[in-house]
Image 1: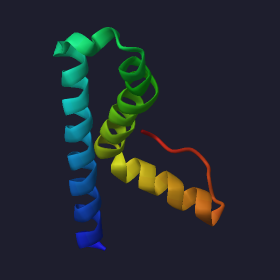
Image 2: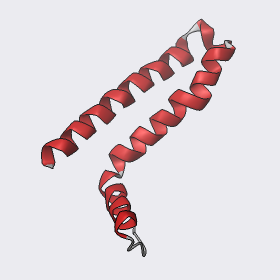
Image 3: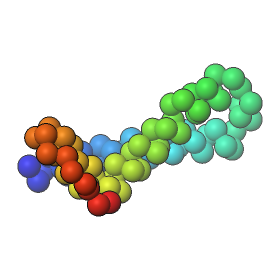
Image 4: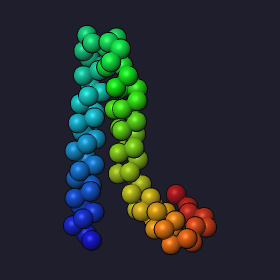
Length: 79
């Protein structure tokens, strides 16, 4: 189980770095006002950055919450 968690962290880190590269391109490129790039940023890359960052930050609590949901014993989880 330990190596699986490490693989997930590495994959999330890689996705996060790629998405941040896309954000950098959006901010510093002359295509900033292009409608397709704006849509990709608004509905794709920016939410992806938020989700991967949150998952890397709070992974143990999220996994605990998901385990409790699956077992049907959801009470209160302190984050």
